[in-house]
Image (cartoon, rainbow, N blue to C red):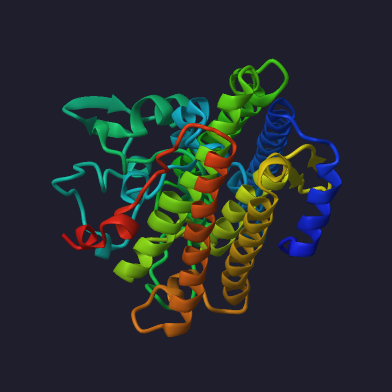
Length: 421
């Protein structure tokens, strides 16, 4: 059963229970670091479960094995998306994040694509390179031996090849593409439908190179596990990311609010939601191969709420909680603390409404179709909630006496005309 968003009364009860603690900045950033540590540890453990499901599938390919691997991928996204709130304010996270969650990607770099995809472009000469089909590659005029697909080849040579950002060769979305294939349904129902026989051996293999495709999937999954293990260690006791926010609690508070505001405003409300609606483009969805975008949006919003309330529910039901940013704001401006609590509830409820609609048959890419008034209403309710809560975060920064923060922006919100230029 999927978790439900916190009700306002629940959040209020939590905040009142913490209020008596007279939270200090040091205690609040300790909670923040504890939530990060748990979130990345859970991301690692669910990625390891994904790896086990992929290995079981590759050892004995079957429709059921592919379904299990896909389900494990979706499960692994829930804790990870809740960690995105640690971006923007923490350089250690920002410098690393592109290894695991970069998007969009030119999937033709990795594997076969439909003819409608096209080939090389002026922007990306490697857009249809198809590493899986070619044991020898030419990248930026240099011959590359790709006869053995390894984590080192992917990380050191293929990812961001030729300096092009969309040459994403690793991370969740590369794995997603290898499990689902392209979603060729446009705004219509259905996700990618890669056949399980793309990994079958011998005469049952479809689309060629099944052994190399399996090697790529194994190597990309190992990279994801390794990268998440590294980040989990950064937030453990003595880790560099934990030390960076706890050594100077005021700077830690600044990092918290920077991440909350930038994820809410420019990244999620703008680049991930409003932009796709403006363009009516089904490719402008975060998990475009699996049609899992509704869950990613929800868990991003929940992650912001987690940080504010100082409370994170782990996949196994365990709870990490402590003195919170909400407590700290309440010490200075109780009305503002309540306002932010209520706005977060409103946003999470709006994102959950998108998730509910998707689970009931209206996929997120369908919501983006021109003329879909109900889809536009659902998406814009989430966008409006994210923008509204960001305005209150700005007031919280002032109330806490922190330096002003320039949150990440988006042309879709700040300069809409530029989107169509």
